[in-house]
Length: 400
Image (tube, rainbow, N blue to C red):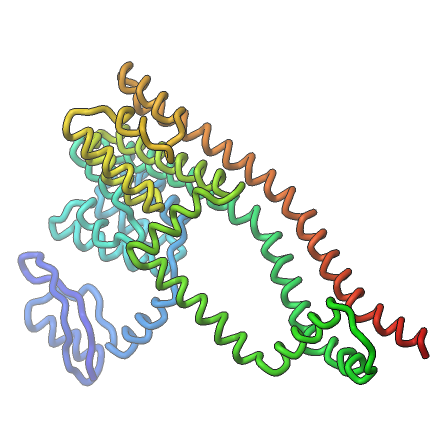
């Protein structure tokens, strides 16, 4: 039987590997005879099962916020980092995060820095997180950096939650309407359409459209599914390409109404994260390069990276943004004030709060407007069905 083990030798160096033995006890004894102190041992089959299960697990932003806040508290209480990580490993609810913390603790115990260990998990700990952690380690204020990170991540999480919450109801209504429409075309309308086609009377244009649509759903449903799947896969592939992603991101900020919402979200994300990095003592050029990957839009990524290059050549951030129509004038103006007065971090923080409130207000307005728009569209759909089906039947009955 094969077992996977973790152990330390006489010098304290961590060892991992596989060992063949008749039982777990026998494997334990073999490792002890080799002079190893066993930390963990388990059958390799159970590890494979656990790893397969972990593929479906996730770590939510809220988990990272709680981890950062608790680690900050433990470090401020003078608890050694490795011991603090071991304590948190027993407290977190996510088994995936528990596994990550265990690995990070082992790396730190082996001599790596916390920031270096966290950088091995870029999916969960962004460049922003790693850079601020590193700045805290160098300045001796790791607890403050982690607490600051937790606060900023919590603000990002709250904004994201409000966006998702605001759009949940409209999306549910749209999906419900589409589902009812599909059922109507597949189950309800075909018998009525058959009656109208057998009547041999002149049908209005709306009825002809409904008949054609019903026939399409009945006879070519497989084609509709194939086209829908093809469009989704094609869109995702195009979005993943360099040119396609840029075009889609550019389209986002030029959409009617929604473009303004995207703009506010991107500006709040940019100003909040740049303020966070500057507050952590990260040099301005490196901070800009880091934020470029966090904003989440390729258009703004290009603008921010170009601003970083200009700052590296001696120009100011404000002058780099001044001629960019995608950046609101207030951002370049306020940035110029911050650079002139030496209070850029505070100015960016105020801008972030301003754009976060603007995004929340606009979300509330859009949610309020979407509901009546959906009801109007639903009413129009019902009116078309009535005009296309019931009126011809009524006329047919009157003629009889």
